[in-house]
Length: 465
Image 1 (tube, rainbow, N blue to C red):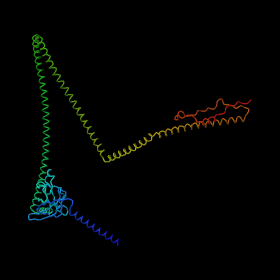
Image 2: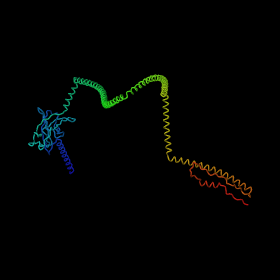
Image 3: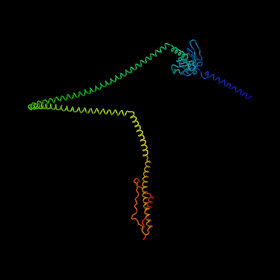
């Protein structure tokens, strides 16, 4: 019984909770607010443009309310707008538009103020006597609105555009416009070509004019410098002329005095001079004839020699040109060119191999260990040669000693009473030769010295009487 009561109570509580949640959702969706008070005003539109109750109302792009009622009239549509925030003051000078947006084309009311609300109106409220209708929109006020962009207008404008494009006159105008544009472009291209030619011609003329200007400037500079030089030379010449005139005056005065004092001597001298001039004239005529003869002979000789030299020179030049032509033909033949190319390739390969060999030799000779090994090898070979010579000398000494011992043994066995003849001088033993290539401080080894002592003959003994 008790469990049944609990189950029934739980079911009742769940039902009550569900009803409460449903009511809250309804209140939230309806926008009913119990804590604050909203205010309403009416907007007159010429066309509803698809507006519906519950559509959003935006102020400066922010949603601030919704549409609560739509009443169609004879001259328009009265739309009641509810603002949720009672503290939001909307200026009287506003622009109210009904615009469609979104994928489904929902119509919203957008309110955009046309000015700033003065600071004195910040303390007003949209309710009752505390509201000033000339500054802000009060509750139950009526304002006019406009229909903004709608899909119907878009379709209507699209139809107009389609009709405009379908008009044959419009196509003719477009064709004529295209033809005019092409003609204008052609004219512009021709004009640009002409302008290019004109600019080239102007550039050439300007270049010639600049050259002429430079030439005129240089000529003017040269003329001015020449004028300055002429002026200075004229001034110096005038000074020289004045000085010369003074000197001429002095000379004339002196000549007059000299003529007066030496008139007789002058007459005699003039006679002598006239006679001498006649003699000189005769001598000059003779010299002229002789010089003409000599010149004619020299000229003939020189011309003939010159002609021969020129002929030889032309022959040598022709031979040289023929030789050069033969050499050029020989060098230009494909076979010679191929041979030269092969020779150059072979020389290049040979040089590369020589370079590689030189590099390898540099690597070998530049290695200190290699040089040290070569030096040790040379020293060892020199020591080996010296040891070979010493062995040969020791073998010769041993043969001589064996022969001497054999002779002594034979003599002692034949006549023991006789004394053994001792040679006056021991056999000559040549000192060991040292190879000049070996180091200077080379000496015999201890075992070699012992062998040398063993090979020496025994000391001589006196005979027993």
